[in-house]
Image (cartoon, rainbow, N blue to C red):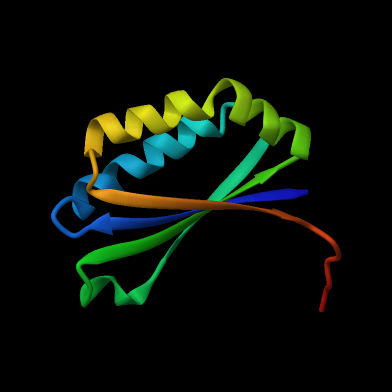
Length: 104
């Protein structure tokens, strides 16, 4: 399993619009090959900062599926976001590969 993590800092002036739009964006990404599910995590510091911090985790079947997304879809999806929200957000990304899972 691959986890693709997107960390967002969203300017407070647009956070409501961004948070309303984000689930639709995620639904669109989940249609691409290999994407299984996604989760949104919020940072409680959102209330006191100039930026609202959010992390989205996508789970994929394989690194190849993620590479296919990067090669064929990522630029378009990122461009759509910039077109809607300009420079009112920042995004950083990382890729995590499951090494071992523990159960209770």
